[in-house]
Length: 102
Image (cartoon, rainbow, N blue to C red; front, side):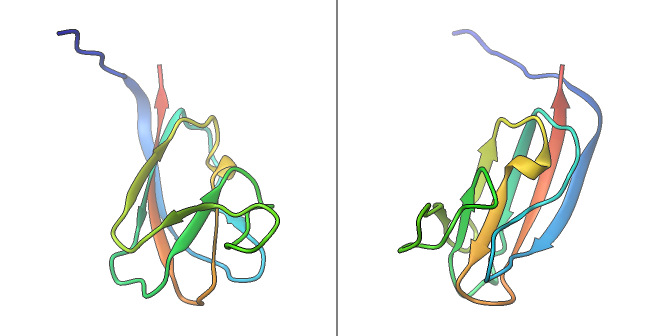
């Protein structure tokens, strides 16, 4: 068995984002190599995630990846602005933890 470790450089970039309903927005901004996004467990509706502000809810031109309350996703991205979110219900939230990879 081979174990692969990803070493991080510097402190993580962390935060929370209130998810918009009209147009998708980036979860944040900052250089990372990997980001973990957690959909808040107290949300009442799904959050849709994608790689640009063009991501939409189902039925739109570019439906995003659906995240239900409590779900956790990881993405290999170079900047937090490459992960965008949108929802059909106001007041939904996500938290993120990003780290630079050596």
